[in-house]
Length: 373
Image 1: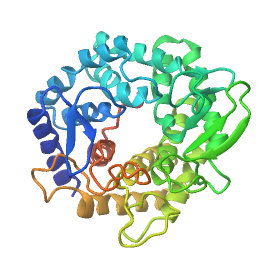
Image 2: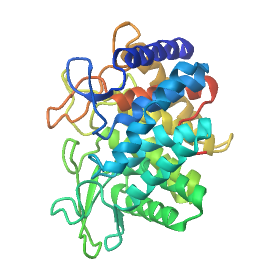
Image 3: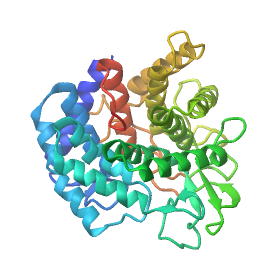
Image 4: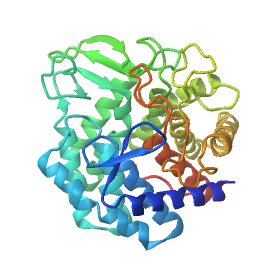
């Protein structure tokens, strides 16, 4: 099952490269992507899929395609194009870091380190956070974090390993601790976002931007937490991060519907028109794979996590993948971007495509993503 799904996905990656040379996908509606410039937070996922395809089949077509974008990503950094946000890791871990790890390119390494410096510049020492959105001093977002940032921290841990400069590690570690303390609730559900006083770091309130309401659990945010805290443990060996990832995974699994693929929020009233978020389940699958590698063979959670992974991935392949749509640009149907904002509530999500393919190739061949060594 996994091999057939991978082969279908990789053919679609190739078709997108050929149909849209030099362009990058943006989220739109109408069961397609809008192809344009490198000016959003999501473009790295397209490059990441090229590297996964290269690693899976050793086809130089994908390697050459991925490498062709490095100058574009370097130029974006140099000109600071639409980078007033924390999603630098999403952009550069899957492009520049991946290229360095696979090819040994010193140019790619230099671009990745420059990206890490750009992310470090978002550290706000008074608040003790990496500011999620906006410029420093932004009246709405100056003291705001969001759970997504956990997947940007591996860029800083990688930069520390490369240079030995402790500032990278310190900032990533402290931000992970703050996220753990304030974004994860006592029952292991999560806030999407949290606000602090930017002048002294005092906690103000939890909230949401894309979830159902401030106190609900946005499923993609929960997924970021599962994978993100597992990766934080891999880098720091702080056992509390592994425990947090485990507890968040249990919460996610226990709140799934019968087909094992999440709705867009765990607290939203469900009826026949309620949107799913297949991307949240794809991210969680990667998080479960990470957890399964980190825990012992006799760990009591192993059977639970293995069953949840199998059930979710089988459902994604059978019920949500576009294997029945040979001309589709996306790999997974029924992803949601911003349901409350009525922005692509039921469509292809490029990050969902990436994590779906990452999970598949890891299950089939043991090939990991590019968040870590």
